[in-house]
Length: 198
Image (cartoon, rainbow, N blue to C red; front, side):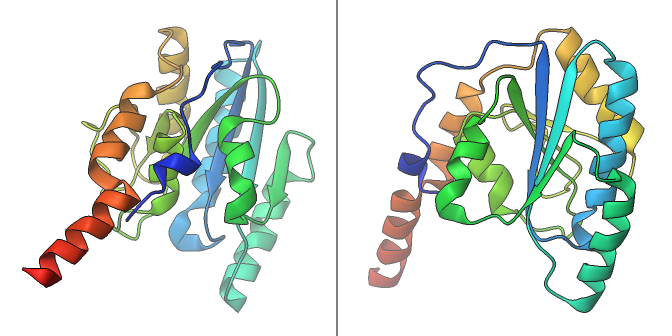
């Protein structure tokens, strides 16, 4: 993937309010993205951090009929509770959600089991967010990436709660720099041009 890192400039004033956490996930609403584990993980996190204000934003939409059925099942899980925000993920307006539109620190959560490197977590890293993922395509060696067990909402909640209690939830400058070096759009275009012109 090529990420337009200029679209995600460094955060000039990182949010420091650790009394509120905002979980964010972006992508197609589909069983293969395992949004269910993320929602259940949110509920487990509320039990582990009862004094913290928690909200979750889910941006994406179903494509197939089975995806639409899956979203209906997810809607039953969220029970129209005010802690949840659903919406479409138009790329031109997504930057505000990566950087946060409310007080609190934003954490990107991701549970896709396609085995491929999704672009949304890379954009989250480019925006300086800590990323929690169960995807085998992402290494835990990437700065700011924490792995949790696939399909295990309790493990997701434990990993986030542990990082929070250790003071590790913060602006992820190292992750942003990693994306800039590995996936910057301009660098990728140059590599492609150099390859075909060689």
